[in-house]
Amino acid sequence: MIALSLLLAAAVAQDTAYFQQHVDYRIEARLDESSEVLNGRLQLQYRNHAPQRIDTLWFHLHLNAFRPNSSWARRELEFNERRFTNLGADEHAFERVHHVSVGGVAVTPVYPGAPDSTVMGVPLPRPIEPGGSAVVDIVWDARPSTLPRRQGRQGRHYDFAQWYPRIAVYDRDGWAVQPLMPQGEFYGEFGDYDVTIDVAADQVMGATGVPVDGDPGWAVAAARPDAQPQMRGNAYPARAAARLGLLPRHAADGRKQVRWRAERVHHFAWTTNPEYIYEGGMHRDIAVHVLYRPGDTGWADGVVVDRTVAALGWFEGVFGPYPWPQMTNVHRIEGGGTEFPMMVMNGSESEGLILHEVGHNFVHGVLANNEWREGWLDEGFASFLTNWAHEEAGRGVNWDGSMNAVVRLEQSGRTQPVGLASADFRDPGTYSAMTYSKPSLIFRMLRWLVGDEAFRAALRSYYAQHSLQHVTESDLRTAFNASSPGSLDWFFDQWIHTTGTLDYGVGDVSTRQTEDGQWVTSVEVVRDGEIWMPVDIQVGDTVQRLTSREQRQTVTITTASRPATVTLDPDRILIDLDPANNVKAVPGR
Image (tube, rainbow, N blue to C red; front, side, top):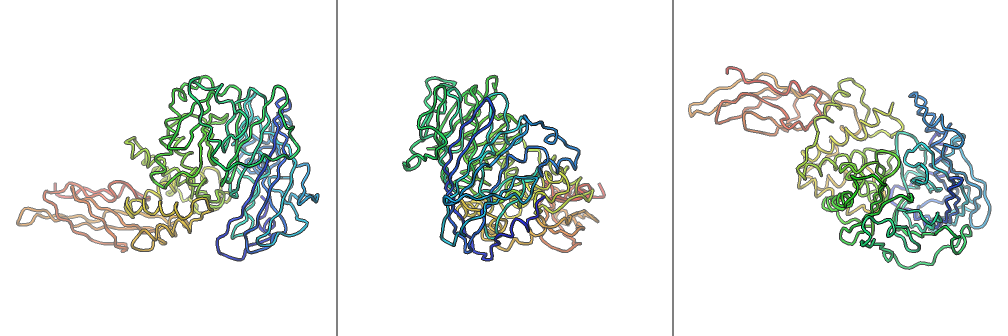
């Protein structure tokens, strides 16, 4: 792995006030299916809103992860996984930069992590002062791998999820750059994209953004010929097309050029397949586009359109308005799913998968956290939100399955703090449990702790204050502290940043009947472990919440009839190390 100190040596932010850089991409690209290579040229205007001058711009070349000898491949070898190590010369992905100039001056890029080349530095002929800008021109080639992983190619189907030199984020902590690794995902700078792609004329395309010129092929590919796709090409103010010199003014015979626009997004992905079938719909004024393949009966007849529309509506109800003009949902080559602004690439029509990935357009797309530094803040959040949506719809949610898996890991002593950077988890299994499963349970505990109304208020505030910005745990904490009667720092400190455990248990229990016929039950409640949480106690049909931080406390509860059992945490909300000692029969029956 490239040492962060090496990559951040060029500039480290000293001012803690929030700022956000701005980037403006203009891209021309041509896909040659005979060679399976995309040729690209981009022009990037970079405006420096930081209080420091910048003397090097850093880019990610993420396709270079999916090849032998990358940091990704070498990390997988530690776990006897050779899937990218074994790819041949015609199979692996690449992203090869051929020329870079800044303000018309040719420069030589640097690759400090070689042989890994997922991180590229562009030394500037002149530093960019605060408030200043620079224009970077890059010529490159790109090819996805035959083995799909967040990108891929198969026959004439191409998923270009990672494909262009992507400027890294410069934030309060300096340059956020690291090699792309199996554990961890992405972090992008917000900006505007104007992308023209030249492909074979019969290709059907989907992308981040809206098509403003050219034909993506939706009308011809429509499942219902009478349904007119909602292009939303007028979503942005008119702008003259970029002419970077890679593409001819008019497409050659048998080819077409489609120009796409996207604004206030931190990534641009696209896909193309001549066999795609198109279905569309609307959510308010948001166009929904679905592209699936022949034989995808589960996607057809508006099923995925309806699920995507419903997901957008549900998340808007939780957070607030979706800020972009469209959402595209495509059946990609790989299973599972990956999110991009205005686009989700899914391996199935699963309702849960669609909810999860559309949810990421809110928690990561709009609220743009650093996924490899605080992966739980979007993956664990999206996992919780997916289950919450299922709950509200009356569908079964297997919280116990997640809880049992996390408790087993806790009992084994092999947990790591949820707040670790993704690459620092010891293995992929621990990363998954600590980034997806446990944080989902933590968010559930937080909802229970503050109550539904305060929880919703905090989420609405978090979204309203930080939409289309980079967010951190601190921003989420602030929103919850503002919506709660007291500080919740203790909650985040212990559940996100420690491996402390919690184990409530029922100690001595006794009960007696009073003269008026009621029953008074005395219960000793014991708490072991380093972590504290309130806990509900149920005696008979009566439930009471205990908020004492004492490790031993005795409570008395009066019930109309003689109780049979005493139960701590009856709804099994808490991550409790030994749930078996949470239930005890009342003696004497």
